[in-house]
Image (tube, rainbow, N blue to C red; front, top):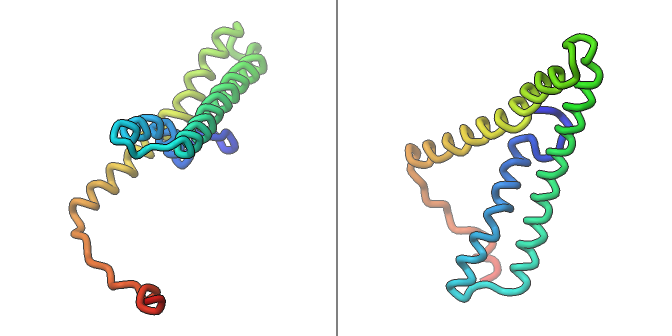
Length: 131
């Protein structure tokens, strides 16, 4: 992962996946008459943010690939060979690796949820005070 590139870490990818699932979930709510204009406005804002992060990450990767390609022309031969080499390194290190780590974290949480039984939490003391 490249430090400073938005959307390439575990948290960024998790946010993007959740934000891109919001229209699907809200469409299901619309079918059951539990949706509203305010909810759709929030869905549109979050989906727009996620798409903005994806576009920014893609443009940053594209810029890095072509910048490093231009700098490495002398060492690797032609510009296309340099760009192709760097493109492979950047694409694997930024997106695929973060997806694998995020998938491992989510899988681990679900496995632990199945292995460790849920326990009942004590009643809140706040509800007793306000009652």
